[in-house]
Amino acid sequence: MTRSLLPSLLCASAIVAFAAEAAATTFVPQDDLAIVALDARTAERRWAHFPAQLSQGTSALYPDLLVVNGWARSRATSEETEFVLALDPATGAPREASPPASPPLARSSEYHDRELRLANGWRSTFDPGYEQKIVFVDEQGAVVWTITPPVPEMYPSRVATWNNTVVFTSEYTETGKVYAYEAGASEPSFTVDPNTALYTTGKRIGLRVVGDDLLVGLHQHVFQLDPANGAVRRLWNLSTLTGVPFQGEVDEPAFFKGGIEIGHFAGDDQTIVVGFEGRVVALDRLSGELLWHEDPGTFPSDPYPLVHEGTVLLTAGEPLAGPRPAAPTPPTPPQVNPGSGCALARGEEGAGGGAAALGIALLLARLRRRTD
Image (tube, rainbow, N blue to C red; front, top):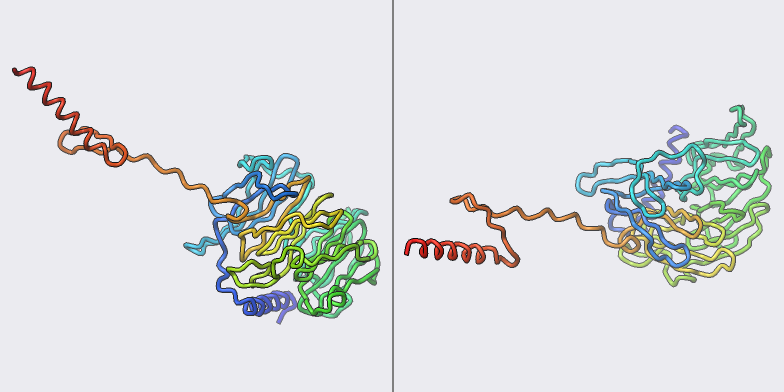
């Protein structure tokens, strides 16, 4: 077995195992989802854009453009398509525009973040889950730093950066831990083991840096950490906050229904949003209070939220997007009398025939008066 295939096979087998535990009945993607903008503090819908087909999408927000990398699998034909949408971020209306060369204001969370940049200019195009070493190059493209994970056969699957610190975690090869490395170091500056804190043995860890917070998730638990040293600033139990169980059947309220059991993080200076396949949760970043929680209607896909200046952008189904607008009904063609070639318009409730008969009667009466 080649090294590059090992993480994929492990991932596939783990998903099957978790799916069996959750007793999910279907994993057929939806194809009628929308891109939705919500008020980050209240979840009030600002707009919804319904592509012809959409199963899942990740977004990048620019000053006057929202770019969505969409994917759809047709329920009718199983045909898979990938596409890019350009939308007006204020209204959701389609636009004729290309992404600018400048970095976006914000990106949505993703299952894997592939581009890593440090404050000192070093960068990496690491492929999470498929490469074992994280290699950084300088602005001239020369290799300046290589991180070798401390555990043999460990493939970092979630990686993030803060200033000149790299944080990463892996799955399936060990009990989940988070490792942090300072630029140029060969040993971690700190490690975080959420399982020890929670007395659990979970391996699939969610991880993202939002501003000066390192967010680490394990099932319904979210740690707000100091990225400089790993100190715990706050710990949320989202099930306790919302009253929604972490795991449930497909047709029940739950965070995890058999697809992916991790949450994806996004946030701005006021709000943190965690998106699961069965629940989106918004938290006040300063006080830690629960703002709102809703079913995104995306199962078995994740909503991949993006948060910027009080707006949440995400993929959503009817619970958050509202019903898909009906296609315009084509006008009813006029009824044609084959004997005369006359077009007889049909009125409401079938009244057109009576009107036509009355018109013919008046015409006959007028003809009789002329012959009298």
